[in-house]
Image (cartoon, rainbow, N blue to C red):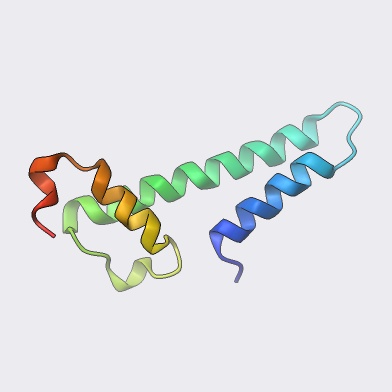
Length: 82
């Protein structure tokens, strides 16, 4: 299975390079890439906030960088629990 970052990058290339008269295909593919990125951020936040740790089930869904970014989005008062 392709990792999410690679998939998003491929979708962005397709959105840019596909020849579409009305641009609908390009817009749909670009929006799909945007949504995947937004869901990855939300997932990292959801995993990290209640637990303060990364569960094994998150492996491959979010990257370590996304988990660190999730920690930085937490209020300062909650960052010390890690």
